[in-house]
Amino acid sequence: MLDAFSRAVVAADSKTAPIGGAELNELKGFIASGNRRLDAVNAIASNASCMVSDAIAGMICENTGLIQAGGNCYPNRRMAACLRDGEIVLRYVTYALLAGDASVLEDRCLNGLKETYAALGVPTTSTARAVGIMKAQAVAHIKDQPSEALAGSKLKIMGSPVVDDRCASIVAEASSYFDRVVAAVS
Ligand SMILES: CCC1=C(C)/C(=C/C2=NC(=C\c3[nH]c(/C=C4\NC(=O)[C@H](C)[C@H]4CC)c(C)c3CCC(=O)O)/C(CCC(=O)O)=C2C)NC1=O
Image (cartoon, rainbow, N blue to C red; front, side, top):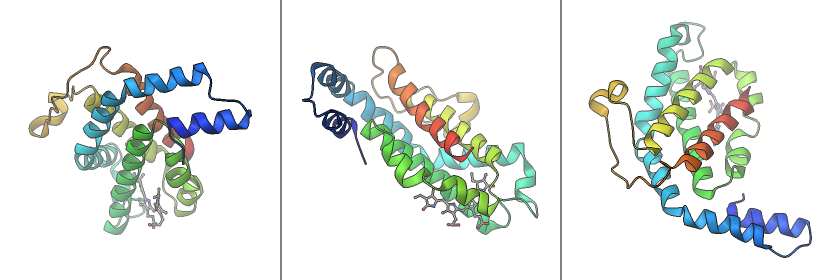
């Protein structure tokens, strides 16, 4: 498992090169955005269980066959497995976001998942839909702009200080981890 620092070391070592100015500048940026990153991780982790249940419920609302006989969220054992998988995915996305590197997500969560899902008949399009909803939720929570219309009484504002560009780079980075999940199972 890598993070932004160990990745720089591994990259330099593979070229037998010292850590250069460009790498140090990149790490400087990583450190400078550290508080934003922690706010982003906190925004997702603090809302995780609500995000997962909402995403899976949304996925099922759009495709109720999933909870009928023959559907992959039926019976309750499979429903529970699906909710659990949603939590696993979100947890590993927050780890990757914290580390600033996707390897923890790739190695410990996504490696072999496509084959597992294929063997168990877990539908790819539905998985992609649930992950896509979690991606939209994560973006809203990182910006601390959850939609009142969608959240209703569960609306939760973190009140973290919003920095410069409304955290555009962190939002893009978090989004990329969700995209990796979809790519890995598709
Ligand atoms: C830490 C890394 C890790 C991952 C990623 C993981 C995933 C994972 N999901 C599984 C099953 C499953 N995953 C789902 C998920 C879904 N079904 C749907 O219709 C939806 C589209 C979707 C939820 C969004 C279901 C229903 C099963 C059980 C399938 C079965 O047993 O028939 C299984 C098979 C074993 C089990 O049931 O526990 C694994 C290994 N386990 C791990 O340890």
